[in-house]
Length: 177
Image (cartoon, rainbow, N blue to C red; front, side, top):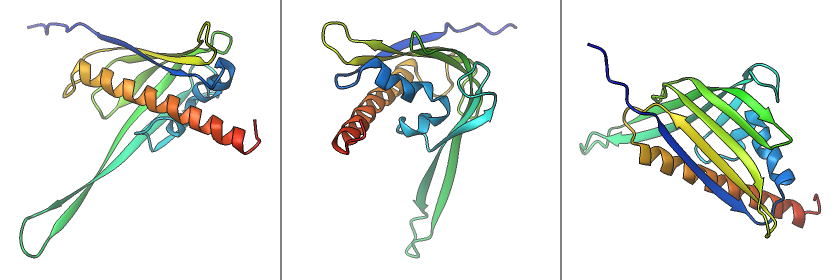
C-alpha cells in the first residue's frame, strides 16, 4: 500500500526593529554560519563545506541539553542525560541587494525530512527601521505539530530581533557605530 502524502506545512513570521536600518540588520542574517549568535536555542554553528556567502555552503547547527533525574531513593542517586539535537543546512540562494537568503535542511536528528526557509530583511515604509521576515515550507515533523513549529520559529525571530537591537544599542553607547 502506498502511504498517503500529508500536505506540507507553511508558515511566515516577522519582527520589526525600529532602531536598525535594513543595511545594519542584513549582515547578521547574511553571516550564515553564525546564526548561533542570534538564535536562542543554538549553541554552536559552523561551516562544514562550501564557500562563505555562496550557494552550496553547508553549516552544522547544534544544541545540547542536559536532563537530571533522581531514582527517588534516600541515597539521592541521580543521573544526567545529555542530548544533542543537530541539523545540517545548505544555503540555496543569497541576494545581498534584495537582502534575502534561502536554505534547506539536508540532514538532522530531529525529524526534518524536507524543510526550506527564506529570510528577508525589509525596510519599514513610513517609519524607518526594518523588518525581519522568516518563512518556511516543510513536510510534517514527527512529534511536533505545525502550530508548535510556527510558534518556535516566531519565538526565535522575535528573540533575534531583540538581540540585534540590544547589540546595536551597545555599539552606540560604546561609540563603535
